Image 1: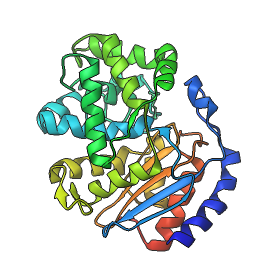
Image 2: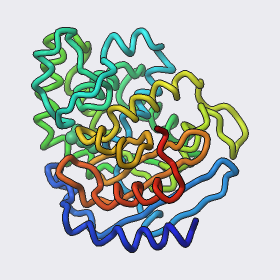
Image 3: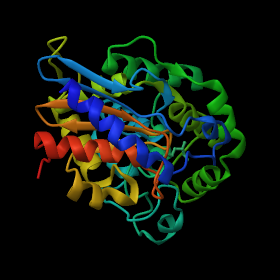
Length: 305
Ligand code: GLU
């Protein structure tokens, strides 16, 4: 597999020129658009990597399924799904329009920004320091890596520019979807997005999700199986923004992407995969990263469908 990954990274890298790094969060604009890396764990714990697999980046929306898992485990299905739905939107991740038109007064799913903001408001703790520590501990546990932290400059960069998210949150409060201090919830959301990790970390987390919450390397159950079924299904239907349908057809692997260029991909019972390529297509997915996954899926027959 190693030789194949090396080849795919070289072949896919050229696509980066057709995309752009996210710059609506100014600090993300500094990313090197030519970076591309992949990391893969198999069920026996073998590890393969190619390209910039060791480079740290902010996970952005890849944090959404992880914080969602935490909320699900802490509070249960009923409470979590009273706040967000389970349906794909077909709209961009930062769209506001359906917040008013969807009659149930909740965001359509936990992976659009409005849904993720609603979910992070459920995390319990005295203050944001305690809450972000809780989120970090959970992600460190999943990734089996203590060295995962928040990038303060990316956090601050989004805090000063994130008015679109700010407006969503005020709207959610107005319709009674969230309670509490709006600015504090928003800060926590920006912190979760600014968590820094590598492809290797994402692959390690995906390996646990690929085995129903059981970690085949540490040989222990880390997450309840039901929680992983829920999050994997939502990744399959809503994980790649408004490109989720096309991604299902072309790649067929439950995945979650982020505007930092990361993609976490779960091949049930087989592989945990992490990809990083900050040059994004028009929908916000890593342009070369999606190509890498498509090639891998073709070669190893990874589509779940
Ligand atoms: N922090 C980003 C935002 O809220 C995350 C978006 C993403 O990765 O999709 O705009």
